[in-house]
Length: 393
Image (tube, rainbow, N blue to C red):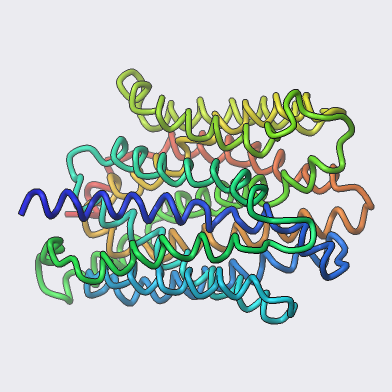
């Protein structure tokens, strides 16, 4: 049984790796679709609301499964949705491609939070480090995405990229469908008591502060992942090596940071880790915004990528640790906030770029986001935990 459960966990990590490719795929194929359909920056930014609207729907659907504590089935349905969405992107019809991004978003919205919650349930004693390892796999997928697209796509078409990506996602999803080794923990207490506890969580200001933190930070991550490739094309100069793009470096150090995070957690608590990451991102974004060459942009991307690496998993762990195990089944507003943040940030960057005629102006959205996160994190670190513990009893 232990071996079967170990295979189940391994398959979850593989699917999370593949979902990393799928999530950031949008940013890597935008230049191709912009050329294929003759789109402006504002029109291109419309792909993001399509995907994130789907992700919002997926998150709502996941919340329905969460009430039955059936994250496994939500993950399976999300996997099938990603396969469908990715394949639709290969069509030459603009409405069909938009539909593909929407369906892909549904898959992302069901898969990412569900796998996070399953891993939390399987790793109750080491939530932060386990989530860092899981999201490390997502980051590896994000790294692979850019060279993967470059290898199998052209300036006119994303070609066989969609087929090559859909295959392993389908296999991993089918393995989950037939693997019955994972049995979710039973919900304790009556359903009425559980409902009351769930309501109490979202009556507390700190819950909404943590959700707001997620909204802004996921918006930042999506903005960087979605627009950095396009922004690189607007900056003069060439990288030191033709295949080492700022986007690749961003995700490489994004993953490197997630590997380093468990070591840093030995010396720093959640609040200090979050502040360390946020100030590191701030330094990187100052370099990104002021860079006039691709080399300078690469340096800023390295710093920003390293800083942002542990922010999301640490915030997820903070939400779970603050409100206890029941929070895992009342997390829908938390993940919905992240989806809304991603949609707003990516669209706003394109809108400001269109109005100002300069994508650099749009990228200031990301710099302002980090400043807001620092202010919010300082406020969260000052919140007394004693009142929360009383409300949970």
